[in-house]
Length: 292
Image 1: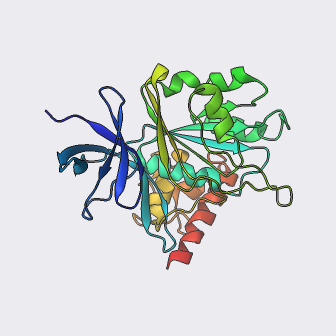
Image 2: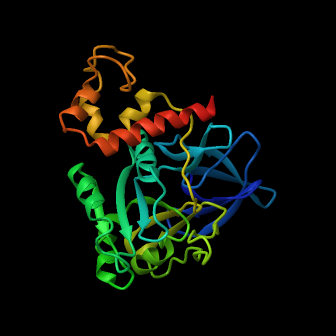
Image 3: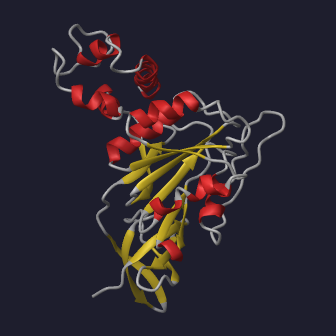
């Protein structure tokens, strides 16, 4: 039986791997026909004193984003959870949280929402926290000045693969350092001029933390998170409170924007769906025109 490995990072023609049995590391070449990504499970073979990736196991899911042409770009594979980190500063860009949640819902990845730097202003996210808790999401309010607020997340990481995402400068590395002291993510300081984070990590990297048997994948810091070309139906499915109403509209191809007898629009009007979330849905659907 072949040993099992996971990809921790990829370069142009080589991949860094971790052996799952004993957590030893190795580097392996891969042929052009393969495009391994962080988190892939692979088998390798040895030839002429070098390791080579022989096959990539079928992915159970992947965390993705849009490339510069609106195509689906796979970033990390076989992910159990996505930890979405937002902060008081830099303030989240409009719709970035909902964009991440659309991906999570479509790919079957469990979201963990972290509102960080609460010591700067513990009231700024109160309404958002209540809103997403009511939708059934796991929500945490954290501050590096209160370690207990961060360690409360720690049990959720055990035996799981978690991709950690968010804008540059929101404190992903600080949070990870408290939960996993031996894991050191690259940090990005905020610009004094713009208040935006410096783009530091350019390569998606997976780390293993032995005490929890946890894998954490650090995704490059972004200022905005772009969704690939999607239909209104796919985007609607990414809004958790829409899901039970999908299929109840008069028209099977309803976009939930202007059609008569739309179940989603009726729920918004009746106050069963928050107007702020519906407006976010409309903006995300509208943004797809840029990929046309």
